[in-house]
Length: 210
Ligand SMILES: Cc1cc2nc3c(=O)[nH]c(=O)nc-3n(C[C@H](O)[C@H](O)[C@H](O)COP(=O)(O)O)c2cc1C
Picture 1: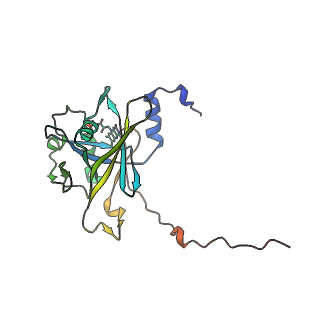
Picture 2: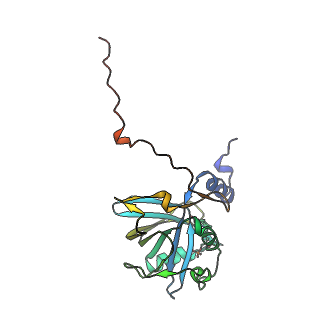
Picture 3: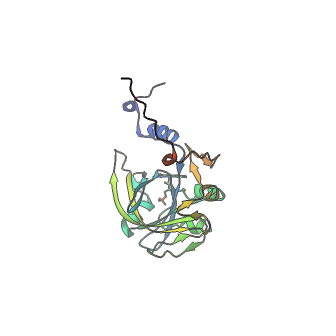
């Protein structure tokens, strides 16, 4: 089968891409409105942008032509927290995507506990093993749907004690959750460890015949 992109409207293209680009990590994001309402929503179009400084990015779409609370709050306050949740939180992640009006806090509705952040005013969730306090860096609009790739600079990493040794995260202990196409999620499967590339023997030089 072949699909020519020029034959696709935005919605089927979105369905196709979100089924192809899998598994996607989930950024579970708290933001705060100017009125002080703490918003929570998941974003799986999520990636690393730079390591020096540490920048991470999420693609935030529109809902019914309007900015989502997360995008609006990030632009207004310049701050957000990205959490990495584990498999015990899948239902709460999913329910936090329900589109409530801006004055409704998904954190309160779901009965989640918050902790104060240290470098920004937006609080973080207490339960996830990783929380990254971020300051808004830049956003860029791509394409025709109004979605914006939104980048933040990490100002503080919170990592559960025992999860990180020598800057290496123990993934099996993190138990991250990923998003697949539609309302489908995946868990960490088998971890397959390969030789460190730096330790792989170099190709042996062979003499060419005289
Ligand atoms: C697991 C998951 C991942 C999602 N990823 C994205 C995403 O990457 N970009 C996006 O715009 N919406 C994404 N959504 C939808 C938003 O979470 C949803 O529109 C939410 O209501 C936005 O909330 P807000 O208006 O409070 O910001 C995702 C939903 C789920 C359940």
